[in-house]
Length: 105
Image (tube, rainbow, N blue to C red; front, side):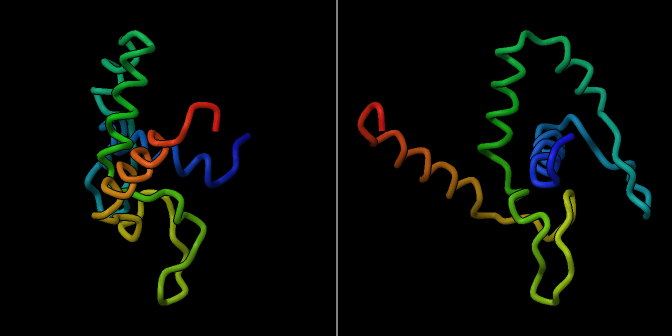
């Protein structure tokens, strides 16, 4: 069992990495993509690189899942309210700050 925030993170990451997609129907069901089969055949280091690259570029913010929008509606994984265009820049800036820290901190 995993918590809702952890599940939301992985679902959003799979979506952002192209491993999960909607069927395009009004009731939106999600399923693995053909790319997910190819991804599974990659060596572990290439799978992790693919996920890390997708995470860094993602505009999705799964950390907001469980919160509410301005109208008090719940924010859910894969919902349109999680899109934040500044997210990739924020991630890069935070990683750059971490890179400046002395070793061992």
